[in-house]
Length: 115
Image (cartoon, rainbow, N blue to C red; front, side):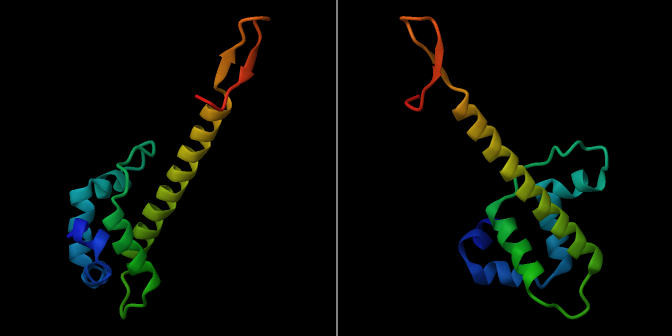
């Protein structure tokens, strides 16, 4: 279902309608246990694109008798995923900026964009 939700919008939309199914998908991803443990040090698996599609659909569609606890859990997961992506982008930019190449002639270093 997670893989299908990644490719097919209707599958993601259908999965959002069942709270129990969302909890099962969360548990199969491994995130539910980690989010329940406050001392997990933000070590959680990458969010699968299919789960991202399901969670996004769940947050941005109105449902009668919304499960507030589930909504908050999904919002927290998406917020952490955004922060993880931002952190990874910053690390990559920093890594690229600090690539140095030694210049043979004078022994100094300079940034190289060719590596």
